[in-house]
Image (cartoon, rainbow, N blue to C red; front, top):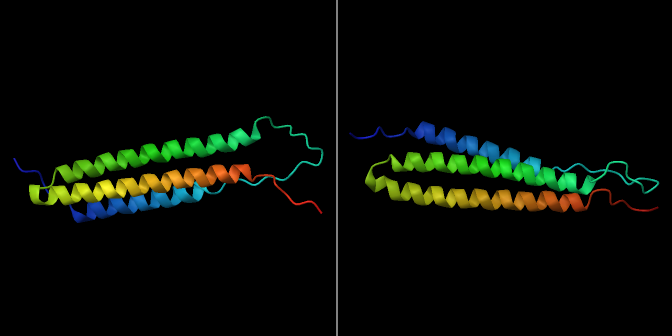
Length: 124
């Protein structure tokens, strides 16, 4: 029995959804909240620097898992293709997956770096 060929529309929708997810993830990862300096130097909210780091890590983990699920689904689509089309599809998907993982990792690093700059003001 031969599998039905997945439509190009389905693949286009999957890649459009991925692009939207990565775009939203990139914007979210780089938008840590800036907080002002305290006048007294005493912070009533304990663990503030780690909460920003935790948000960055939690978001990265969620987006990474989403990317892994997208990658697995795309691999399933590639596996259903006939033999001459299967290898190029898998190669392209592997390259896309690696690029997405690199983008997510860089977004996480940028988010964490923004956590370190929170509250740094200028005197004067």
